[in-house]
Length: 332
Image (cartoon, rainbow, N blue to C red; front, side):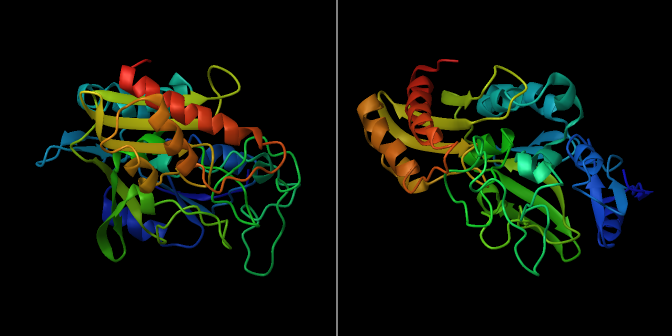
């Protein structure tokens, strides 16, 4: 591991100032960053430890939603009574990710910024446009034309076919969470749909935050789809594995008629994948399998396999239909 300096601010303003320094990184749980430093993928010259900031509460919002502090751990969030009662989709999604030990350390803010688990990104001996961030020319992508079983089938570019690894973010996308941010220019809010990026010509940029900006909280809207929801995670083994494909579903039903529908996918793109036009296909229709198939077709429109991962297109189609069926029946 390379040498680095260390700071431990006591308030948000001081933390933002510290992060403005070149090559600084925030650290909270450290469950991803420390691994990347050991692998020589991340090379910060300064770590800004934000664990002293008062950002670990979970509280109700005046309009009926819930505010999750950025430093609340994944475990505390998943088991919080208000989350399990009103946002069971989020609770179950968090519990589908990582181990209990990791969930006890990992924070909500850090979960948003997990980096891809692409093998080539972690292997410093191979070319990677995401790891070798440069505007001086492409380094290459070992996954394109290489072994790409876990890689993207949607939204990828000629520079990168990595996927976003978070389970929690898939549920947040379906719930339409809003991210609260503090930075050098003040406070702002952005929808979760606008937080993560597709790779395009700048695959090294995972998100839309500017330098020095800090996530302080995640706001959940009032509707948690507690009545009909499902998180279906398809993976190579039953635990401690990232999703090959995952689907988060929230439905509001009037009898068997769909009044409101949300779907987001993980493991298929550089960000949680959601298309509102696919969800609209369900509105006013019976919640039956024959109406779910066109939704899967629409969500996966334009999906492309790259050899080892081509199977994920059919896998994702089946997962979408099954997740919708399970959400109607509330099968766990």
